[in-house]
Image (cartoon, rainbow, N blue to C red; front, top):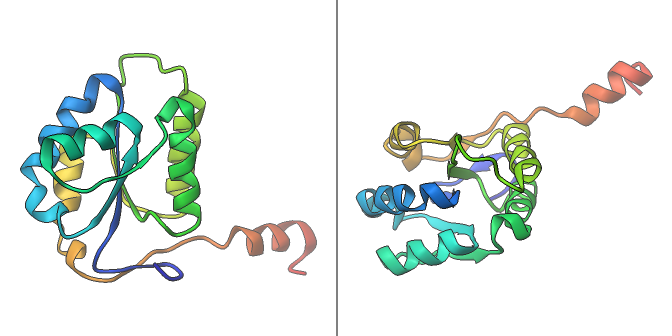
Length: 153
């Protein structure tokens, strides 16, 4: 990926909390005909389980609580992940909630599409934009901060 452009082949991160892993695997199975045309990555056990259950290659990072969420956040910041599907468990407290919040903040900051449930994932994956290049609208916060604090220096 170069600059703010998402290419035709998206780099998609697949993440799920423990109580949602089966839901994500079932969703990936139902969309494997689309997902097979993209580059997939995911956190620890989720990536392993998706590959085992679907046959799709998924680049594996560390488990979320062991730094995987932060690794994916770094990939977003470096332009190596440009789309995220995150089936999270809203009813169970997670020991790494601050990492999850940081990951979601980075996703918003870098203007990548994010789905956190099946309906949104379906809408995003079947969008006509999935087959085309797409120019993200990443806010230049450095310029904004310089302008606000230093009068545009």
